[in-house]
Image (cartoon, rainbow, N blue to C red; front, side):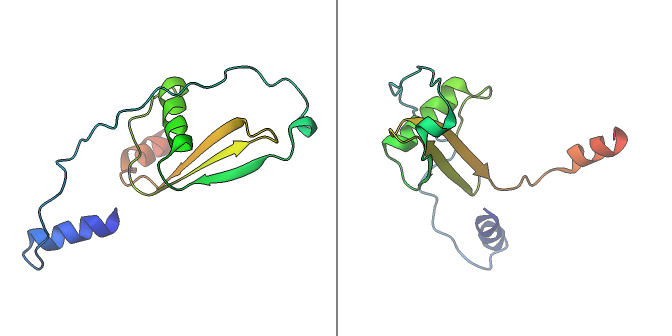
Length: 121
Protein backbone atom coordinates (compact mmCIF):
# COMPACT_ATOMS: atom_id res chain seq x y z
CA UNK A 1 0.00 0.00 0.00
CA UNK A 2 2.77 2.44 0.90
CA UNK A 3 4.69 1.64 -2.30
CA UNK A 4 1.57 2.20 -4.39
CA UNK A 5 0.96 5.49 -2.62
CA UNK A 6 4.54 6.64 -3.26
CA UNK A 7 4.33 5.66 -6.95
CA UNK A 8 1.09 7.61 -7.34
CA UNK A 9 2.67 10.71 -5.77
CA UNK A 10 5.69 10.44 -8.08
CA UNK A 11 3.30 10.14 -11.04
CA UNK A 12 1.30 13.20 -9.91
CA UNK A 13 4.51 15.26 -9.66
CA UNK A 14 5.59 14.19 -13.14
CA UNK A 15 8.70 12.26 -12.03
CA UNK A 16 7.38 8.99 -13.51
CA UNK A 17 4.50 7.99 -15.74
CA UNK A 18 2.29 5.14 -14.59
CA UNK A 19 0.08 3.16 -16.98
CA UNK A 20 -3.67 3.69 -16.78
CA UNK A 21 -5.36 1.70 -14.00
CA UNK A 22 -6.83 -1.63 -15.05
CA UNK A 23 -9.83 -1.24 -12.73
CA UNK A 24 -11.87 1.75 -11.64
CA UNK A 25 -11.77 0.99 -7.91
CA UNK A 26 -14.67 0.27 -5.60
CA UNK A 27 -14.95 -3.14 -7.20
CA UNK A 28 -17.51 -5.30 -5.50
CA UNK A 29 -16.47 -8.88 -4.93
CA UNK A 30 -19.45 -11.17 -5.10
CA UNK A 31 -19.34 -13.35 -2.00
CA UNK A 32 -20.69 -16.80 -2.80
CA UNK A 33 -22.88 -18.56 -0.27
CA UNK A 34 -20.95 -21.70 0.66
CA UNK A 35 -22.87 -24.47 2.39
CA UNK A 36 -21.20 -25.38 5.66
CA UNK A 37 -21.97 -27.30 8.80
CA UNK A 38 -23.32 -25.31 11.72
CA UNK A 39 -23.29 -28.27 14.10
CA UNK A 40 -21.72 -27.73 17.49
CA UNK A 41 -18.53 -29.59 18.28
CA UNK A 42 -19.09 -30.60 21.87
CA UNK A 43 -16.11 -32.57 23.09
CA UNK A 44 -12.87 -31.99 24.89
CA UNK A 45 -9.96 -30.44 23.04
CA UNK A 46 -7.91 -33.64 23.19
CA UNK A 47 -10.52 -35.48 21.09
CA UNK A 48 -10.15 -33.15 18.08
CA UNK A 49 -6.37 -32.80 18.13
CA UNK A 50 -4.16 -32.25 16.32
CA UNK A 51 -5.44 -28.83 15.33
CA UNK A 52 -3.68 -27.52 12.25
CA UNK A 53 -3.26 -23.86 11.39
CA UNK A 54 -3.16 -23.41 7.62
CA UNK A 55 -2.37 -20.33 5.55
CA UNK A 56 -4.77 -19.06 2.90
CA UNK A 57 -2.58 -17.95 -0.01
CA UNK A 58 -4.86 -17.86 -3.03
CA UNK A 59 -8.48 -17.78 -3.93
CA UNK A 60 -10.15 -21.14 -3.75
CA UNK A 61 -12.77 -23.02 -1.77
CA UNK A 62 -11.23 -22.19 1.64
CA UNK A 63 -10.92 -18.50 0.73
CA UNK A 64 -14.52 -18.46 -0.51
CA UNK A 65 -15.62 -20.11 2.74
CA UNK A 66 -13.59 -17.54 4.70
CA UNK A 67 -15.41 -14.65 2.96
CA UNK A 68 -18.80 -16.36 3.25
CA UNK A 69 -18.41 -16.89 7.01
CA UNK A 70 -17.07 -13.37 7.56
CA UNK A 71 -19.99 -11.89 5.64
CA UNK A 72 -22.57 -14.04 7.40
CA UNK A 73 -21.31 -14.07 11.01
CA UNK A 74 -19.00 -11.10 11.60
CA UNK A 75 -20.80 -8.08 13.00
CA UNK A 76 -19.34 -5.84 10.25
CA UNK A 77 -19.87 -8.31 7.44
CA UNK A 78 -17.22 -8.74 4.78
CA UNK A 79 -16.52 -5.82 2.52
CA UNK A 80 -13.03 -6.94 1.49
CA UNK A 81 -9.65 -6.34 3.03
CA UNK A 82 -7.59 -3.19 2.71
CA UNK A 83 -3.81 -3.23 2.52
CA UNK A 84 -1.53 -6.10 3.31
CA UNK A 85 -3.03 -8.95 5.28
CA UNK A 86 -2.54 -12.58 6.19
CA UNK A 87 -5.33 -15.13 6.46
CA UNK A 88 -5.27 -18.44 8.32
CA UNK A 89 -7.74 -21.14 9.19
CA UNK A 90 -7.71 -23.81 11.86
CA UNK A 91 -9.00 -27.33 11.25
CA UNK A 92 -9.41 -30.29 13.57
CA UNK A 93 -8.27 -33.89 13.01
CA UNK A 94 -11.32 -34.47 10.77
CA UNK A 95 -10.51 -31.41 8.60
CA UNK A 96 -13.52 -29.51 9.99
CA UNK A 97 -12.97 -25.72 10.00
CA UNK A 98 -12.76 -24.40 13.57
CA UNK A 99 -11.68 -20.80 13.07
CA UNK A 100 -10.63 -18.29 10.43
CA UNK A 101 -8.15 -15.55 11.31
CA UNK A 102 -7.35 -12.31 9.51
CA UNK A 103 -4.41 -10.11 10.45
CA UNK A 104 -4.40 -6.77 8.65
CA UNK A 105 -1.79 -4.08 8.31
CA UNK A 106 -1.72 -1.28 10.84
CA UNK A 107 -4.21 1.56 10.52
CA UNK A 108 -2.81 4.76 9.04
CA UNK A 109 -5.06 7.42 10.46
CA UNK A 110 -5.14 6.87 14.20
CA UNK A 111 -4.79 10.47 15.42
CA UNK A 112 -8.50 10.82 16.37
CA UNK A 113 -8.33 7.53 18.29
CA UNK A 114 -5.12 8.57 20.04
CA UNK A 115 -6.52 12.00 20.95
CA UNK A 116 -9.66 10.39 22.33
CA UNK A 117 -7.66 7.94 24.44
CA UNK A 118 -5.58 10.81 25.86
CA UNK A 119 -8.73 12.70 26.84
CA UNK A 120 -10.35 9.65 28.42
CA UNK A 121 -7.60 7.40 29.83
